Each structure stands twice: as C-alpha cells, then as structure tokens.
Image (tube, rainbow, N blue to C red; front, side, top):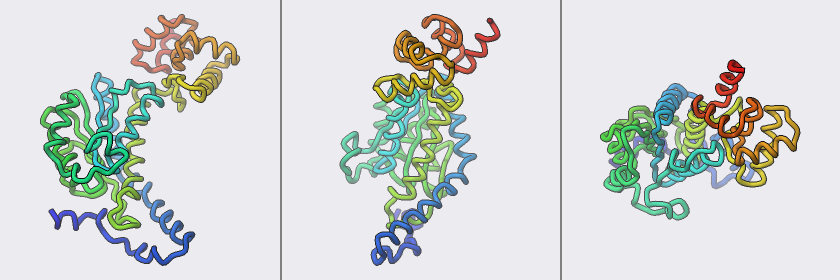
Length: 304
C-alpha cells in the first residue's frame, strides 16, 4: 500500500512551491493562486465522465431513487456541503440528496483520525442508510484509497445501486469499484499532500456540476432561475417575488399575494399566474409534467 500511495500525484512534491516558506506574503499568495488556476482545466478534461454521471443521476432520481455522497475528511465534508445545499436551492426533500462522512457528523468539525481506513464501517453505512438498487452512491476520495469509501461503494455495487467515484488520480482502487469514474488530476499540492487545496477545489467544482446538472434536468429551474426554492426567509422571499415579477410581468403586490396563495412555493406561484389556474389545479399540472415549469406552461398554452 505504501508503494501505491507513493505513486499518487496527490502525494507528490510540487517543485514550483518548494521555497514557499521563504517568499513574501504576496509572492506566496500569487503562487497559490497560480496553482489554483490550473484546476478548471483538469475538471474540463473530465467533462465526458461528468456528463455520463449526470445522465445516470437523472435517471435514478427521475425514477424515484436517491443520491448519496460518501467520503472521508475533506472529501466527506464537501459531499455533505453539496447535499445540504440542495433543499434551499432546489426545494428538494433532505432525503433525496444525502451526504455521509466517515466518523459521523462530528467529523465535519473535528478530524476523526483512522476512520477513513475502516472498510467495514463503510459497508455498514450503506446498509444502515438503506441504499437500494434504485439509488446512486458517489464515493469521493482524492487518493482513491480510503477503505471506508472503497468498501462502501463496493457494497453499493453489490446491492445494484449506480456507483460513481470522484478522485484526483488515475487508476485508483476506488475507480475499480465504480461504474463511472471522474478523475480530475490536479498534480502535487502547494503543500505536499494537503488535498484540501487543489484536489478539494476540483472536487467542489465536480460536485457542483453533478447536482446542478441533475436538478436542471429534473425541471428544478426555469431558464437559469432556481424557481423550485421555498421562500423560507426574508432574502429568499424577496428573491421569489423578484423572480415571479421577472417571469410573469405582474406588479409587486400581485406577486406577493400569489406567493402567499402558493404557500411560499415560487414555482407554483409562477404557474398560477401563467395559467390562471388555482393552486391545486396548477400543482397537479406541474406534477403531470414531471415538475417542469416550462413544460407545464407549454401544455397549458396548447390547451388554451
């Protein structure tokens, strides 16, 4: 295993930053910034694999399945972060996209050493959270060697779930147990082995694409507006009113009144105004159209 780890690009020494501790503050930050600038190119090289993953995730979620992230350390935290942003952004149920980290929730704030090496716990997690053949599991590991993630993904595959890995090296052990592998290779880190840096940034960009692409395909947006959000605080309420006015042309009072009638559901309010339907009728039409506001509006226009 030591030879395997030593061969990973994420464990390499970056010759460009060897003297970072002798630089001025501005020179140091410029060097970090230069290294960070290489990350989008590495992610771009993986777009075919990311697209395949989004297509697979869309099939799973459109069929009633769920999406699970599993990871350890930085990778696990990024998965939990991405999952936790889906309900406020896309109005999803918290159970639809879930993030799980080795060591449990305490590991989100405090490093729990050794838990990434516990493959049996990775398997147990998959069974405990009830993964089925209709679900998708995304394993995240910069090195692709975390036993917790490898064995968790292996167990998910045995169940029949769709398996996807996000790693930062080619030819990883995690990639071997996944049906789709996304591997943006960012090279040695500014600080050797600190994969919260370029590797973590690459992972964040990939996870952004996975959930955003999937949610767009599920009809969670109207054009580029996140209309499926719930107006649960003042900022989101103001945003919802602006989106309703922008998409329908109604005045401020009408937008507010309709949003109230729609129980703070921005998408439903837009549908009510566009169609002239009451809340229940508009909700049913949206449901019949798979939640796609644009499709529902077009169907309504043809009927009218």
